[in-house]
Structure formats: structure tokens, C-alpha cells
Image (tube, rainbow, N blue to C red):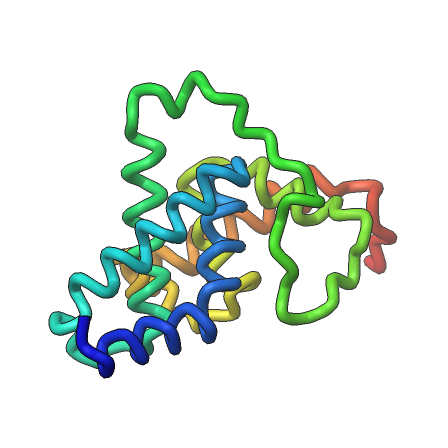
Length: 167
């Protein structure tokens, strides 16, 4: 392995490792499986490093690889028979302090359907823009907006009574 490639991989792991791990953890809901997925993401990224064209940020590119890796894990035959309940203690720390330390919101997001959870995770947890989220998921900006709106309605129902409604 050449030194330049090694330095680039280390830079990616330092800069984006926690973000990729948090996404995989919340998507797969299993600590061990998420760690395996993170390793797979960085191995795939290293192997494909020469194909990165710079049309999006490195973070968006790595998250796209994480999305595909998590989908591959979820498609495997044994995945549906696993207990995928994750405990809040197993989740990696977020970059900003969680304003809701009881993890109610995180658990509600984890309970969203597979079609909505990645959009919420990328947009609000990973703080990608709408367009970056669309690029990472390979869907249109309009689809991201629709899914966010639908997820917001579902989260509102799930969290009703947990917060004070200021209507």
C-alpha cells in the first residue's frame, strides 16, 4: 500500500469514522454488525479511491458507500432473524450534545420504516444538505423532501405527549 493512499484512508477514518459508524448503528441496530459494516465501508472506499470524481464531498461519498453496505447487510438471509435492538449505550457519540439525553427521539427515529430512516439520519444526524442526502441515497431532491415530511408526521405521532405542543 502506498503512503499517499494510506494517509488518505487514515484521514477519512479520522474525519468521518464516527459519522459512518453512527449511521450504520442506527440503520442496522446492532453494535457488532455496525462495526463490521464500518470496516467494510472503509475497505470499499480504499479499493474505489481512484474512482472518486469529486462531484460530491468525501463525506457524502462515504455515506453513500455506507448506505449500500447497510442495504447489503439487510438483504442477507440471516439478517431478518437477528435481534437488531440496539441500546442507547452502544451508539457512538454525536458531534453535538444531545438535547434529549433520555434518547426518546433517537429510539423513535430508529423505529421509522427502512424507507424513511436513512433520510432522517442523513439530513439531521449527519447534517447533510437536502441535495447531498439525495446524492447519497440516489433519489431526487423532491423525494427527500417527501420522505422527510412523511417521517416528520410519523415522528410527531410517535412522540405525541413526550413534548409540550406550543400550538
